[in-house]
Image (cartoon, rainbow, N blue to C red):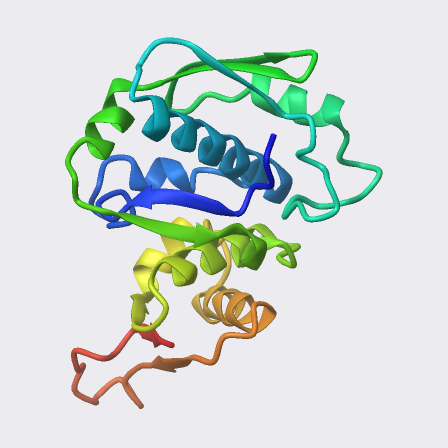
Length: 208
């Protein structure tokens, strides 16, 4: 397997209203999320090259190389990666399994349909996710790597980062701020100065 550098994602999938968007971020464990991104990247690259929708294969040998964006620790082994892949249930795949480092996969019709729309692809630089030790940070880094500058609505981030609903609002916002800080992205959270102030278009958004 060649060095894994980019995750190609269609511009439509990175739009919050897209059906597959929420499933892209439907993870609560950082390692599982990164393994999924790695497998999705390789599978997408293979499909874009071959343009076939039957079962194809690739090896994960080399996935834990020194330049990998996956965590390099004794806790993440090929056995662990295989367990993650074999337990994966995702609308991006019709089927996916691995045995002795050989992955067999077939992309879902829904995902293939999105790629065939010709809306263009963005290349997510995976090494930008390497230092992210927290799932919220990894998700946020992926979103910002896709769109380098702009703003993200509070409610969107609360949902996609899976910030616990039982926490107080102030604490939930603090967790989002910590995610920005952990990936070294300058931001400003804009909100009304008090309850009587006019709510502006720029409010309740993280501008970065």
